[in-house]
Length: 228
Ligand code: DC
Image (cartoon, rainbow, N blue to C red; front, side, top):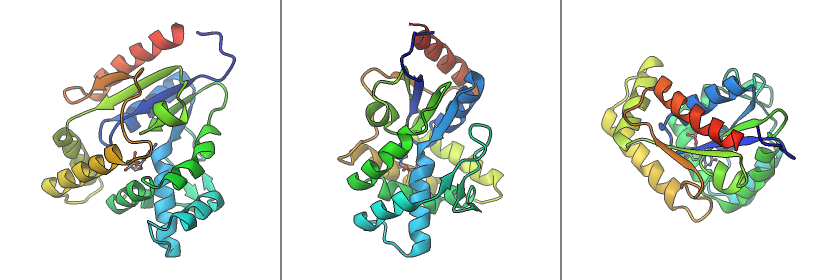
């Protein structure tokens, strides 16, 4: 491994449904690294704002709220348990509504700035795998390895529908697809930290790949970078 002065970071960016959540979590577990689900921070903020009656475009109030939130990921990389102010909000922040809210608050520059240091604080020994949209471009621009996962919107909508069905819901494919496209559009075109690969990111299209094939490819790419 590189002779690091600092703690190694691997970034995994991409749109929702690209597989980055599953892949980055598996990678963190394999390497024994910590894990940051940065999307969960935006989801938490939108959820907490909803609870307190704060509008999702009230930037000053959202900035203030983001500094006050008592957020914990008690299980670190082994489950997606999320605790807000002592309350388990793991499922509450995974709804489509929370996702839409997250995308709205994430478009606000001052909100992104307010969450920046909070995200960097996750960098702890022996290393970090950070999952998000701007991990390799903004939050950890000097990361040791950068992965950018993609998949077609249709493939991502199919995956999301399957997830929702597993939760006992009855999703309408066209609605999910429209939602994914709208969110992609917003995430890719916002002026601050838009969703795009870092110039030095390794791109992996997961459309035709299952999870084992994807993790195998990502593992090899990461290994090459860490050994450089
Ligand atoms: O990865 P996710 O679906 O949990 O993310 C929810 C929203 O948060 C997504 O629409 C974009 C936003 N997000 C972001 O702007 N930057 C990040 N690093 C992570 C998520």
